[in-house]
Amino acid sequence: MAKVAFENEFTYKKYLESGREQEFDELFDKAVEGIKKEFGKKYPLLIGDREIYASETLEERSPIDNSTVIGIFQKGTREHAIQAVEAARQAFVKWSSLNYKERAALFRNIAKLFQRDKFRLAAVLSYENAKTRYESIGEVDEAIDFLHYYANELEANKGYTRKTKLAESAKSVSAGFQGAPSKAEQISINMKPYGVFGVIAPFNFPISISTGMCTGALITGNTIVFKPSSTDNMTMLTGFMVCKLFREAGVPAGAFNYLTGPGSEVGDELAASKGIAGIAFTGSKQVGIALAAKAYAIGAPKVFVVEMGGKNPTIVAKSADLECAVSGIAGAAFGFAGQKCSALSRVYVHESIKEQFISRLVDKVRSLKIGDPLKKENYMGPLISESAYRRFIETVDKAKASGMLLYGGGKVAGIGGFYVEPTIVELRHDNELMHKELFLPILAIDTYRDFDDALSKSNDIEYGLTAGLYTKSAKEVREFSNAIQAGVVYINRPVSATTGAIVGAHAFVGWKRSGMTGKGTGSRFYLQQFLREQSVSVTRS
Image 1: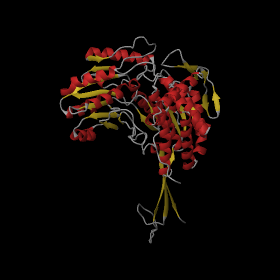
Image 2: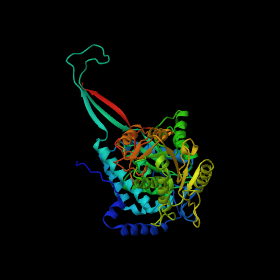
Image 3: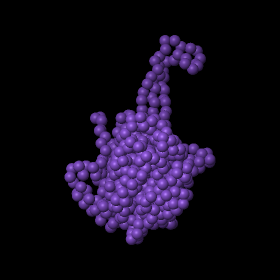
Image 4: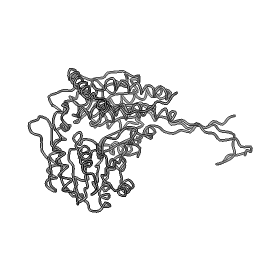
């Protein structure tokens, strides 16, 4: 079979470079008008081949405009989770026995369906979590990239199977011992699926991260119970669409089960269930650790493929290209209102250029347009929920009490919804806000005198997800690359200081309390986390 070349989707880039930006906008706007007609419908749980309706429901509203009801979803219970685990368990034997080439081909077909529905998916996503059209299309592209990349990796590694042998010895012994001469052995070393995975997805990337985790588990032969974000920060419709596209392409109903409901019941049951072999989770450190603690405390240990957020730093050296630094820092801190685990939240700038840097950064941030993310001119939409807005106000008050407010800090006037200003504060490194993940459009700045001090401050955190540096010094590049404690590192990157990992190019991996495995998504090692090794030796008689 000829090797299939991997190519990133890059939809907007391709439209822009071919002079078709207007066509891109028309396709997105048309998709927005189309999906509005479908809002308000009732959606079931999908367990095995059944559509199930619970006794209680969850109403999902758009953060863009709280009067828009996106859909009515089921408030799944612990009993529903038990049923879904059983359906996945029953589907496992047949699904796991499918040849890896057939699974790879099937996932390429899923990618084609995502390409077919690309603008529709992006339009729903923008309504659901208030991303701009560019962020939404980029996320759908990333999902497509995951599908293609992991299919290629499965084939390139021949389903993670290899063979070896031990030669026959000319001598024999009457009783065996370690290293004793033996007859010839033919040995197969196989990576095999664990069983059923619980896949628990976040609100901020409900298409790409969900697709990536679901693909990692399914393409390696596991079956899944998938739970999208279902309380407070709701993104249940995109989750439903992802499930339906997987099933449309040929993933058996029982292999992919869709379950909405509160984490206190559904998520807790997935962690506790002895029928669940593994958990794939992206979300907060607190929830990730609690899931693992729950499983091990009750004697139901599992494999955990987990990413748990960050508190990401960037150093701006005295030799930095300030135009490049300001562009990358503004994008990393305020894209999608800072609601990314990779978002930039801490800057350490050399004291000699502090005033010049802050002046330029404030000018840049002041130019960012805030408003309805469905309109192409707006860069930043609302926060995902009222609880996020309350955290924003509380955090700004704390920052003003212990530091200096440099820009922003308030609600945007004249717009309904939780629209806030991108905010810049000056704080000392020892302030609690320099260490706590906020998930808000708040950027804190501190100064440094010696580069070693900047490195020390950058690493003085429990997280280790992303980090950035702007400098013209080759020595500082080497020192930063060698010493920074983060899984994803960008140097002199104008598009973003800490965000925007590209599948197949950047491995997206968390160190320290940002992850559990030290292996990243969109990389050659990701699929192996969903497999366990088995050595089978056959001695000829």
